[in-house]
Length: 117
Length: 107
Image (cartoon, each protein chain N blue to C red):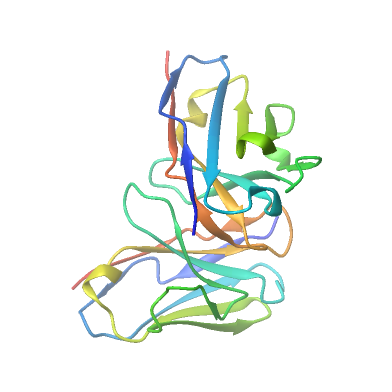
C-alpha cells in the first residue's frame, strides 16, 4: 500500500526560503512521478509542479517558475520542494502526491508553512 | 489555463439521499478528470479518475460520468462519513487545476 510522510510545520519570515520533504515507503518509489500541490486556508488546491520518476526532469507551473526547485533522492525515497523569496501569500499547507497517472492516488499528510514577519 | 467550476457551490442533504455534483471545464478535457474528497485538516482522497473509474477501496456508492467539458460525481446514498468537501481536478494539460470545491453538509 505504502505511505508518504512529510516534514514538519515551518514558520518563515518574508524573503526567506523553505524546504519541504516527503519520504515514501511501502512501494517502488522509482516508478512514480511526484507532484506538489498547495492549499491556502479555505481555498482550492493549487498545483505547483512535478518531478519525474527518475528525478531527471521537472515541470513547474509558470506561477512559481524562478522561485521553486524540486529534487529527488531515489536512494532515500525522498522528494524535496524548496520555495524561495517567501511572501505572506505563500502561507498554505503544502502537499506532495504520487501520480497514478494524471490523478494523485497517494498524498502526504501536508506541511503547514506560515510566512509572517 | 483550464478553469473548472463546480455546482452547486454548497449542498445540504440527508443520510440516504442521492446527490450529484457537476464540474465544468473551460474546454474539452477528454475525460482527464479526477474527483477527490477532502475532510478538514486532511489531504484530499482520490475517489475517481478518468472521469468514471473508481479508485481501489472506494465504496461503489460513488460514481462518475461525463465527457467533453462536463462531468459529474454522484453519491447514490449518502452516508454519515460522506458529509465533507469534494473537488474535481483536470489533468488534461498543465497547469493541472482544481475546482473550487463543493461542501456537502447535513440538512
